[in-house]
Length: 218
View 1 (cartoon, one colour):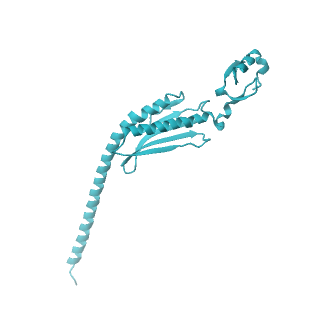
View 2: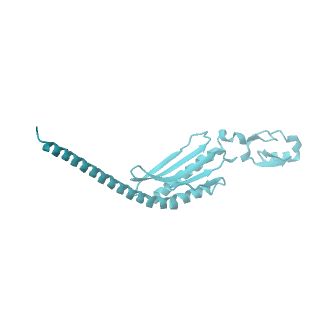
View 3: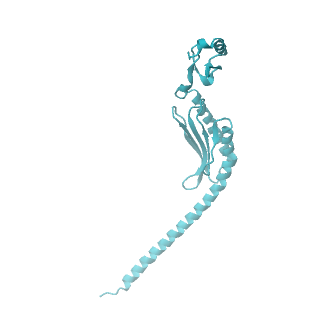
């Protein structure tokens, strides 16, 4: 019967090789975690002041121009703004400008996201700009955000003129019978607890001279 010494040696060599592989893998994973922790810290160092000094003031400046707009406190990295449904803007809208990182934490992404409900026309609902994490230029971020927010204003103002959104606001001038949007009426008048809208001031004057003649004709 042959000796088992050679077998035992071969087994030990395989076990030693496996142990070396395990340790190498563990060292590699530890190194990767240290790198990710370092990049996460770097991302936070860049992202937080970028949001507070560049992005949030611009979104607030936008919100201040609309009575139905409200900045929302939410998770870190985001700056959402909601626009409530009104007669003038008959849709629920949420705009969010936020910063995030790519999967490897090598780049910072400045993102723009827009939701409009209900949806009756096409619009750009998402866009982003990528910066190497160690080369984020605040002025370029500011310029990009300014461009996206002015584009948003153009999109939002389309709600005023899109027929699908304005159907409920369309009425008839009770004097001349012209179809008008009450939000754009040149004049209005109260009669018997009801508001009437007119395409021009002359129609309002004629209505107020003979309200019973014209009431109920719109």
